[in-house]
Amino acid sequence: MATSTPTVAATLRDRLGTRYTRRLRAQGMLPVVIYGHGEKPISAAVNAKEILGHLHHGSHVITVSLGGSNETCLVKELQFGYLGDEVIHIDFARVNLDEVVRVNVRIEFFGECAASKKPGAVLTHDLAELAIHCKVRDIPESVRADLSAMQGDMLNAGELKLPAGITLAIDPHAPVARVITIAEEKAGEAAAPAADAAAPAADAKKEGEGDAAKAAAPKK
Image 1 (cartoon, one colour):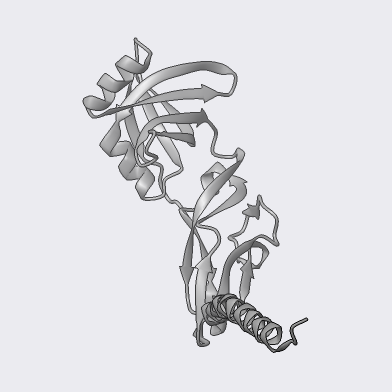
Image 2 (cartoon, helix red, strand yellow; image 1 turned 180 degrees about the vertical axis):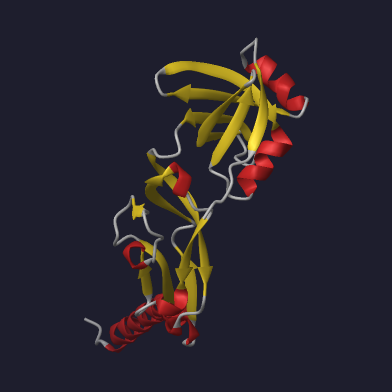
């Protein structure tokens, strides 16, 4: 479980627009918006390296220090650049620690399932994050998924052991991980080309038999 809330300093943005946000990012700052709880949205900027470091370590709740006051905020949305590999904007939603929210947390896989030990078996992860409901103070950095407890070749969301006070926000039957057999797929793929190759040969044989029958027929 998350034990502390990191604090980042923010400064107000007096100008908006694409040109100014580009200048901010060039200076190592990241534009953010703070909204919610019936208060006026605030446009601000934070140190990009600092906030991205907290996000990389799984922080979902950030204390934003702005103008002498602190705002407890939930990371609500990340906006990425057109290549999809760079965060260019963050939306923060004001929250209190006892508020129940929906949030996506990282799934930490561990253990080995029996089904993955079979020849040709490959373990795949259907989900990298899990949507949950819980109080802000109880948001975990991750949810653990014990693959050794898998019954059969699939682990569903409802089979995960969640900490007290945390509930699923998705269908409990949604697959989290599964085992597929590559050997069977390859065998099926190999059979199709063989059948395709056999078809022209059969057609050629029929044509040859037809030509032979025409040659042997008596002329009128």
